[in-house]
Length: 149
Image (spheres, rainbow, N blue to C red):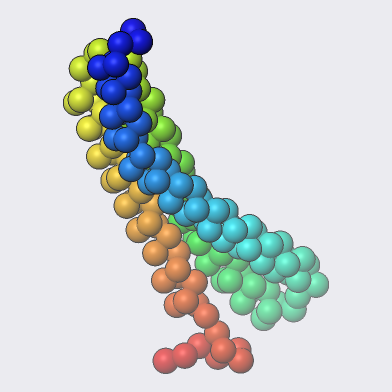
């Protein structure tokens, strides 16, 4: 088990695992952004819900409309978070499978490739949900109480 060729094989696995580990760091940074965004959405919704209790009927209609938009934004971010977490879990499994494959000399090329592709697709879907949330946030943006355009 400690022969030089086996040590060289493990070194190659470590080299192969570096790219997925960098991807994992990028997914973690994305999750940080998404978590911050959902926190801001929740804080804004709580403020509007507090204002709703003392609102006039006209203001209540506007607040309900804004709360619906915030709810939709929160749903999109929650989905993005779930997809990003799935991506991170799959990338972690890829790294673990690389080592298991090398140490136990088991051919896991196909499962590793499938897991990596699914991880990338999951990350892409998470980013699309994030983009949709950003578009929704900017579409409902008001400047001085009026909507542009």
